Length: 379
Image (tube, rainbow, N blue to C red; front, side):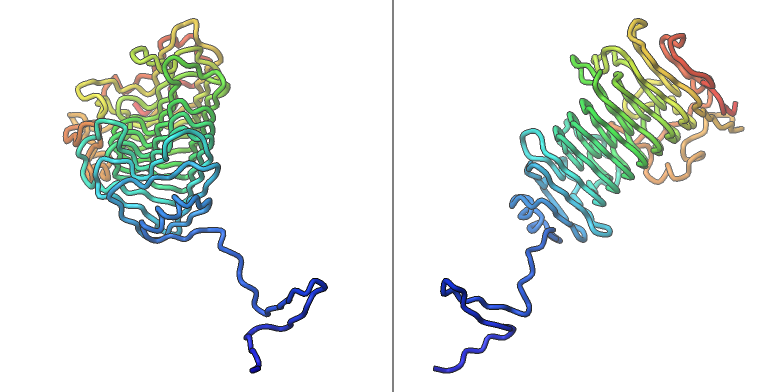
């Protein structure tokens, strides 16, 4: 019988039960803990196979939704410049599957919805770059959402929501739509060109927000409707944000008397150290309406408790032009895309330089605790 040679074998022995034990100098490597994908086929396969840790490389082009099945816990991350890019049709680009619950973390991933001019929003919630509702836990770090046909990140009814250092750009509606979420942190994000609220977190009609916590801090918003948080909670903090040329209002609080959102006691709300600059009277969300309010809060008198508004800086630059300055004149980058809105391009949107832009209004300002309500005003 000829000798049998096996490369790499260092020893062969027999155990007491007569089994052969082969020792190899180069044992097989353990299976990878991260699925690396660089194509749509591989991405969908990894998601459908239940991979818990997926890394996306390069640009992946899509022409239909990427469905993310709900599992107990999953991490999706991008390498440098990882992008999922759509054709610009009206659909959810990355969309959670049916059901509720689960934990999802997404890091360093860009979704480009494909629109390069503003056609106006899709008429339903069907269109969103990240459509991620009803999770137990959602965390997004360093992600970008741009050129959606409607919403940048749709994350309603989430138990714990964390957005850190994310970017939103050219969105006909909200950058983050988080209505009904209970423990919310939006921090260090930069949002430019939104036709609706840059950051919004409402208490749904018919519910109460008594047990929720909302922290919105150190974000920069340019050309959005601003920040809207309706309803109180255990703690609502809006702090250290820069809101530049917002349409309609800089910050809105309280109750929406039309929809009932935010109803209940407006409790434990603190708004401090925010910089609000050059509020616009015109609204891309509601054509024909004008407001131009730095901060607005509506609530019945008996429903105010522990509301503090303090140390905010309100700036309205003074221009010598006879007519209200156009956004292109004051903020040159605005002209690159024009005003983003729910209804499409607004070529004649202007800054409100008159008295309406000086307002810092609550229905019942006597119930507001705080000082320095209008410091830093330039005119």
